[in-house]
Image (cartoon, rainbow, N blue to C red):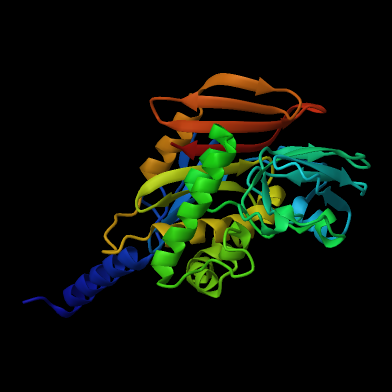
Length: 347
């Protein structure tokens, strides 16, 4: 029989074990632990339902640089995107005094058809009208065929980001308008099936942005966002993240500075939440990705072979056939060596 002090010691051990189980565990298997992944570190994973995220920690490489994101610049009326009545080319103009960052997959709402930006770009102040490469994410011809109205001459907002990996690949890799339309239709079908209601908008049933604003879609996404949005609170060195759906690592998104990442975090998380909802298995059977899977993804992404360079936009595409990862590095032609964003997409 255990004596009094022995019973107390055993109880203490049981309590400690219970607390260890309950404590949030990050990469490396210890609370607060991190794993090295090339020149950055990761923490996590953090999971809600079928969406798992690891945070990426790294240095600030954009010190002293000031930017506005596209959605911010449009809201401040310091940036204008003009309808050209050409499906895949618009005109844009930075009216302000600060560089404006456009990210591949930024949704453009307005004009005669909703579009998405094809490339990452930095648009300098007082740019004048310059080309903006885009894809259409609204196939309906009703707005397209009508005479250009005053309301249709510009795009009013950038309400979000592309929300599936197939759409990201259609935009960045395939660069094919027909495939983009096909993936938009597929996304609408998936979301309608998951929501058990048609989430296509009556105003334009082929518009991706309007589908993403459906109350059923927003309600489903909010459950993920509520649980995960505060992950970066109190962490000053988070420069990006990588995420998995149904246990498979899907993408990484790493920026040149913590400030730049914080300004896109809410938009990106919402898009990932919608993607996770669209991909949620009916039987709800899935295993969350572990920290090692995320570490491997980031390390493998850095092994890609350069296949294209576009100095005009500062883009470098690398492809890792073994890891089945496409990576896009975005730098500034005006500042050699400056990294704006590194995106990795599984394929």
